[in-house]
Length: 464
Image 1 (tube, rainbow, N blue to C red):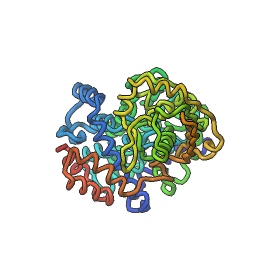
Image 2 (image 1 turned 45 degrees about the vertical axis):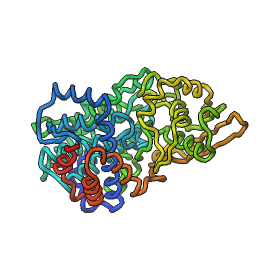
Image 3 (image 1 turned 45 degrees about the horizontal axis):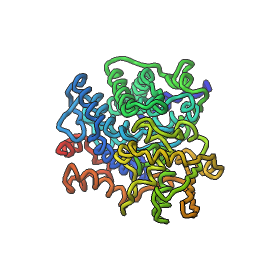
Image 4 (image 1 turned 90 degrees about the vertical axis):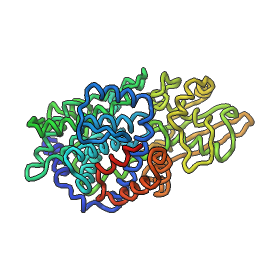
C-alpha cells in the first residue's frame, strides 16, 4: 500500500492531460453529457429549492465573471458553481456512475465552466478540466465502494469535492509546477467532505444541495491554493487521510490504474427518470410491461421485484416520508410507473412532478404493500459497476402473470441514448428558454468541444 500515491497520480493526470489526444468516443460522450447537464439544469432551475438557493447566494455571494445558468447574473466561480449544481442535481435526474454510487457530471461541468470564465480559459482547456474532474471523482468512488455506502455516506457528497478541485485547479495552474499545485488543491479539498446519508431514512431537502456544497468546496480549495494555502499531498492515501477515515477497505490501484488510457466516464449513465439510478431498470420494466400488455395499476393484484443485494435496505423501504425519499424508493417508484399515463414518447420517463403528485395518492402505498422484493441470482449476476439490473413480475386480477428481465436501464453504457435521442431531449427542454437556432448552435458545439467557450454559452443561455 505504501507504494501507491493516488493523490499524486490524479494531480499528474490532471496537469499533463492533452485534450488533443482524447479518443473520439470520449469526446462524443462528453458532448452528450454536456447536453444532458444543460437539460437537467434547465428543469431544476424552475424548482422550488433552486429559489431557496438563490436566496442563500443573495446573502453570501459576491459578483464575478462566472454565469449563473439561465440568468443575467454573474458571480464568483465558487458561488456560480453552487447555484448551477443546485439546478442540475436537485431532482435526481443528473448523470450517474453506478459503481461509484455518485453523480459526477453536474459538479464537474458547473465547476469547470465557472472557473474557466473566471480565469479566461475555453475550448481544449475546459475539455481537459472536465475529463480530469470526471475521472478523479469516479476513480475515488470506485476505490471505496461498496463499504463507503454501507458506512452511511452518499459519495456524491464526499467524492465530488476532489474532482471539482482537480478541474478548477487544472484551469488555474499552468506551467512547470502545475502538478504539485493541483495536488495541493486536491489536498485542501480533503478538508471538506461530508456526505452523511441520513436523508435516506428520515427525509429532508438536504440531499438537494449535497452535490452543490461539495462542488463549490472543490472550487474553493483551488482558489485557496492559488492564494497560497496548501493541503496534504497524500490526502487520499495518508494514514489519517480520506480513504481510511471514510471506508473500512479501499483499493488505491483502482485510482491509479490506466489513468489516461481507461476512461471511466464512458460508463456514466444518463438518466431517463428523476429517480435513483439503481431503481431505473425496475421502472423501465414496469413501463415496458404496460406498453406491451396494456394494463393499468388498478388491474394489478401483486408485484414481485427481483433485485441485487446492493439495493436491499436504503432503497427498498416502503412508504417514503417525502419527495426526496420517494425518488430513492424502489417499491414506490415501480408503483408510480404502474400508475402514470404512458403517452407515446421518444423515451418514457418518470418526472419529478410525477413523484410530487403521487405522494398524495394513497393507492400507491397500497400497491407498495402488495409488492414483494426478492434477491434474484440472475439480476445479481447482471448488475455491475455500469448498471443495476431488475426483474419485474406482475399478477393481474384477470389471472395473467407477466414478467420481464431488464439487464440494464435505458441510458446506461450498454443501452445508451442515440444521438437523435440526446438532441431531441435537449431541444425539447431548452427550446422553452431559447430559440431553436441557439439550441442547434449548442448541439454543434457539443459535437466539437474544442469550440466550447463558457462565456458564449453563459451569454446565450442568459436570455432564458
